Image (cartoon, rainbow, N blue to C red; front, side, top):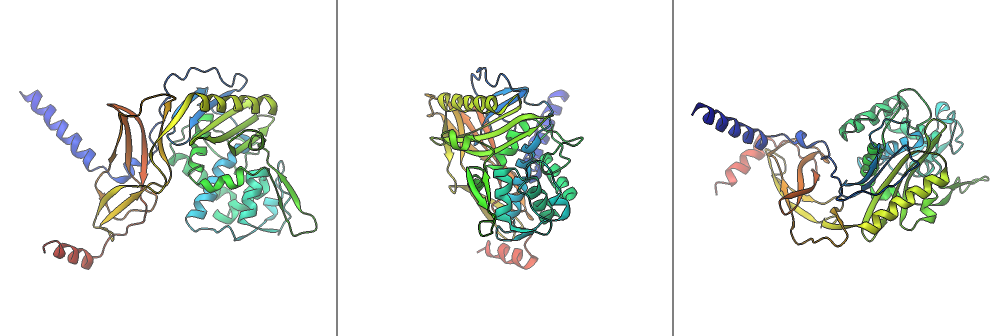
Length: 394
């Protein structure tokens, strides 16, 4: 009897803790699901590789995907992610002038040949990073946002931790060879997926050629280091990388018929093999899989009440497409979803994870998504709470 009573009490306590879980409990993106029947022999020459559905995070194929490896310029995926987030938060604007320090101008490797004191807009710097892999532009933008490269690197590592990246540590913003700087194919795919939640980034990463310093006497011609954006149908990003240590690396993305996938390879022997194996990975995805959309961007997903908030409730709107990956020809009639929200209490920050969208096929969980707050909700003053309380009585 005592054993049954104890089990009952423990079950009640567990249910209560789940009901009262704070919003921070939802902070990490749920673990990616493995696609059904993913048996393809892809990327044979790569040291590590992964193929992922960008919408759901479902893994289609992986090979040594958690190995810690030097990423070279693929580092700039995280650099660009923090730039895009700074733009969203109003920390910087695309029209802001960015000055080049002596230190930024001293970067070797891939660069756009910034002179000390030279100014470009954030828009031009971002173009130089995305297309030409500018090490100098990366440092200049880091200094603009964080004051120093070292502080920006701290931001990169903090963001990696927030994304649940277990095999990533950054020591600089551009991927030039340095000790204690590594990531994995899996972690790169997660970073790339997060970057693609800012769809405007492909305006830069998907452009094959353009100019900087257009109005000067010596315009600088940019050609995208990722040749797939010109030669592969649907490709529009994301980032190449090479050092003698890292060999040839690429995180690529392409979209066809509503399906966007991310293919990452690390340690390829040369650019020809790298591009051919990534193209094969993308081909495999589009031949074998399809997306089933749960919510389109800007669809209303539901509402949630906020206890003691300046806003009594939040309307949840899809910031991007929410979909599940299925084998082509699969039935979609028994796919359903539910929103799981803990009790929310102000204050809440915009983009803070506040719950989950869980998608089922029958009783099986297909995938889970974090749901973020669409707005900042401050704690309401006592007078507003009093009026709200009194108003509810009538």
